[in-house]
Image (tube, rainbow, N blue to C red; front, side, top):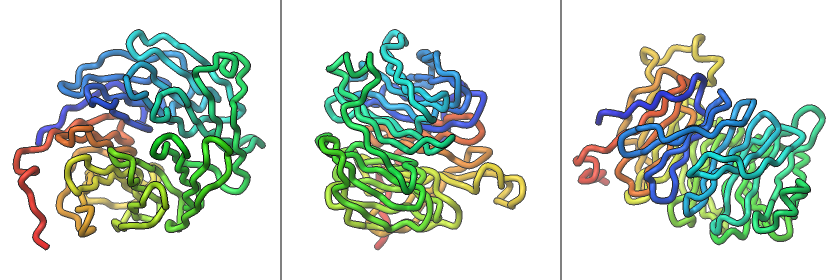
Length: 325
């Protein structure tokens, strides 16, 4: 399995995201640039320039028309995917930590950080109403007073958003009324990443408490737990196999003070049903900050603290692999 190495960032990768067809891969990092790549050969298609701070999150709508990015420069920006033109600029009072299009691509949500005396808010805008964008007035704004949101994704049918908080809680926020529909507290520490399965029925949460957990999207029932020895920064569910990939490592600031196996940080593969680890992929020189499966399940990508994105195409024997029960 020889990876394709994408060198387009000078600082650590914060998020990577495939579009729905999987022909494009978006990557954002702490260096203000949003890159888009051809996933088949790793050629860079272009960049979206405009942010002046670290970019924390990126999302693409279902027909790859628009791209949404959220940044520490206190703004969330909407771009034309094809031309790279900035379509909308939404200013906030603190850094934008998570962002996402709903299933239709008409409604966007983003959450802001609790910092500099400002609350953590989850904001919803309807792109079909230009007045909301011009006035910078969301149709729904949910304050999160206790614990800030560290990761969020849209649930099925765009009815609610699943949000993970810094104390390990997972909440469902209704995108119509703004109320909390359901709560789950399975993690003991901060949730670093939440990713849904391809049909949105399940999601996996990656936490600082060294586990990743699989949940049912609508009921928030806890299904499986995958344990490791170090914090999990990201986890993704394979669209075709019962597999889960996890990336992690110690905190970036502790890398020099702790010993790992000669500084290689692995992506770890677990079987989703048996909760057993069956493979590791080495590569990054630093913790893996985000992982993502290609929508066809034949490859996966990882972005690391070292500023590189790696696209790995699976070998044929991966698809024949059966875990002996």
